[in-house]
Amino acid sequence: MRILLSNDDGVHAKGIAVLYQALSQIAQVTVVAPDRNCSGASNSLTLMNPLRMSRLDNGFMAVNGTPTDCVHMGINKLMTERPDLVVAGVNKGANLGDDTLYSGTVAAAIEGRHLGLPAIAVSLCSKEEAHYETAAHVTVEIIKKLHFHPLPADHIININAPDLPISELKGVKVSRLGSRYQAETMTQQADPWGRDIFWYGPLGLENDAGPGTDFHTISEGYASVTPLKVDMTAHESLATMASWLKESM
Picture 1 (cartoon, rainbow, N blue to C red):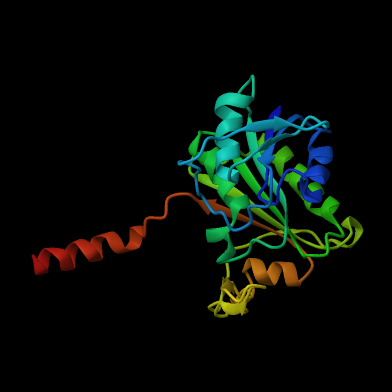
Picture 2: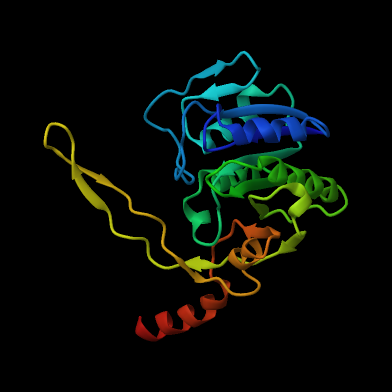
């Protein structure tokens, strides 16, 4: 098996190194990742500047672009053979609920899916970086099952693991996305020259976080696995909208 591994925390992040070691036990792994932290990049592409690749001493390839750029370049230009699977992570911090809309980690997986490959996004629900090996362990086990249970063509898998030792992980549960309250407003400060600068505030608190959600699964000490659809169409609203549009035209 050939795996393209990327992330949004950057090619030097601890999470991608730990996941690389775990995946290398079951596959031939190629790493193509941003040369810097690109958290929150979502599905953005670099269109107005040239992309460059540099190869690190450990063989990882660093690209001066977004996670989506990295996956696109990896599949179309940098890998000599087409991969069988795209994996993104392990992200430093959760990608639960609404986070998936902004996540560069999830976006990297989506790009793999756009290019016709099964794909997985992996995150560790903590900023402490204590137990990346737990998220990597869950990912390896999920990949082993994909051989017998292939993903539908428009799906990716979003894995979130609690920051616990593998021995303390209670198991793995399939969860739906929860949601957060609106994030805090931006904060305004001044730089050393007195010019205004702005920062995004903290993420919103959990809103829909009851049983069955990814938030709840993590809080109970389980890893959360959520199948995500790339098709964002609200199919249940098509007939209703067509009806009232017809009436008003």
